[in-house]
Length: 191
Image 1 (tube, rainbow, N blue to C red):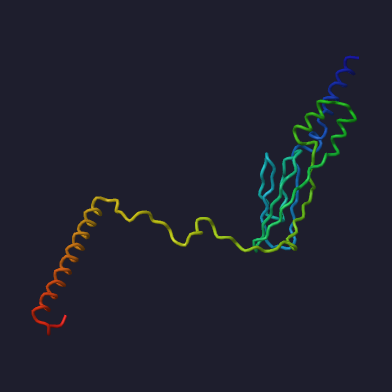
Image 2 (spheres, rainbow, N blue to C red; image 1 turned 60 degrees about the vertical axis):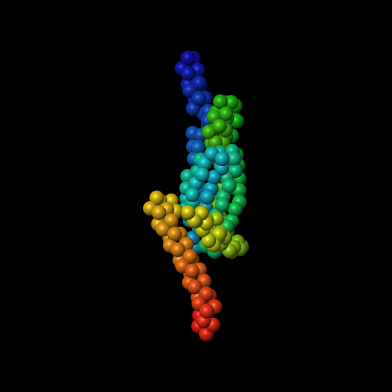
């Protein structure tokens, strides 16, 4: 009797988490593309993120949440859709045995759910869009800040330049005044 009871308990424990034992918590999903030679897809939910380059098969963690799929192809074409999560048929093994821990484990591990095994991404109806200018390139001219030098040597050179400019302006005014006075004394003189 003890042997029978022990075997019953062990078999019940082995049947718990039936979906996890039979299918596992991961699933192979094949991504195929139509209407584009090359594309890249970002697939994920709030827990996982994957990058796919169709045609490619990847292993995805099963879960309750739908997967968001955003695919891009040449011509700046983009296709976005949700990949629905459905209940895995293997969870029925837990329902038949009426074992609550197995159902709970399958639900929390994600094995109770599955995604479609083949995903077709169709770019044939996707419209091409013009590329936008990157944010760093939106202004035609770069603002270089104020026009003040930062090095001590530059400040001295700037002061020498300002002094020379002032001396030039002073000499120019002096020459203009001298020419004007000479014209007063000799009106036939040309400027």
